[in-house]
Image 1 (cartoon, rainbow, N blue to C red):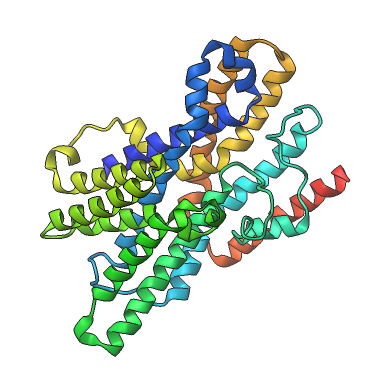
Image 2: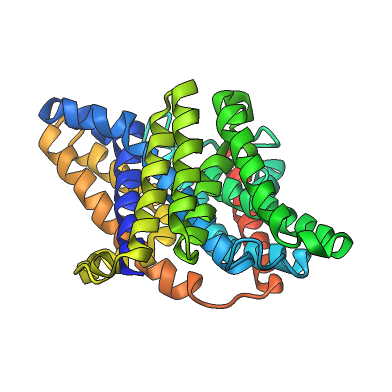
Length: 363
């Protein structure tokens, strides 16, 4: 869907510019030129990640249960391993680049944004997408999202696996359990877990947004989409009334847009620019690779023009454009290709070897 690609592209742009504004050091020097804009990007642009979470749930519902309650996840372990492989291949390549770039810029770029040299446990935790659960510092900006996306998919697979078991036990109730389980976990997330930052390393904190995306998919295939919209609004409004959260309002808006797009021929035919569609299609790769690109550009600009606001502002723009170019290379070179678990294991070994070498040199 072109509009889905457009949403992903806009969210991707927001996240890259959020990191450019939040982490510095270019934004620190360029700040006098546009303080209000940089403050907004640093504070609010990060909410765009919930657009990705909603779209993630939307696509997960399409693959696991195309119609509400009409199917359950077959071969759960196969589904999970396949998802890991799709996420991990470009992720591991981007992490390796990040580790190497950080090692190159660390001697000259004195910024808290530059990760420390990794240790073995940190590398393995990242490789298996459990770095936050293991209490390890991130090796790149945004890697927490990849881990959460994987957790959310595993949780969704578990929900439909439970539904499959219930269908075998009580065939007359087939399908109801899946819907009720998704609604129940989404409600718990929105009303309980998402209000406690102590859970923000787990899928339960984010399942409200993910679940809204799943409901949006089902609403698009329902003969009575109004019922789904009413349920989504009731859940979202109740959660916002209990505790206003801009991130949740963003997720609810994105989910409702997805419903509208599926039921509106006018929106489906909306002329989305090809460049925006293309960026949306490769947004995951851009998201993965932009941080080391930004570090490299920041190191060069800081060395050449350490106190020139205009140069640093142009550096931020250059970092964004180069991130898109690098993301395109990663998308076509790695993400779009099918990868076996053996290939993923090799990529993990390369990451560990590079990280170990960097750690030895730093020590």
